[in-house]
Amino acid sequence: MTEVTNIEVAGRILQVFFLSFVYIFGVARAIGAENKLKWFKHRTKQTFFNRKGFLGEYINFGYPRTWQGVVVFVAIYGVIFSVGYLYIFAY
Image 1 (cartoon, rainbow, N blue to C red):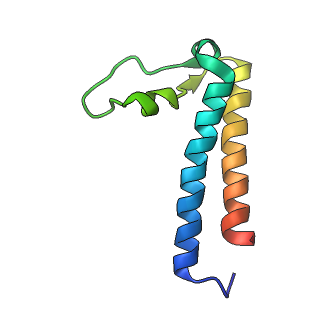
Image 2: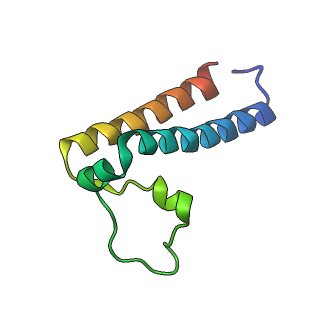
């Protein structure tokens, strides 16, 4: 990683950030709205500061409340962190 410049690292971080949103959107679409409601608990109190738009609400899973929700949670974060770490630091 000594030959990688700061600009390249910043570019990689932005790519991982963007691709993580695409990945979360794909997972949300794959499991469907019904399973999201069964497997995750959404925050009930909404204020002006934590309101989300359509896409923000679509990719918002909430807190896992079943074992399927925990599996999805671990899969999402595990893939994002492992691929992000490998792409930023090892590649």
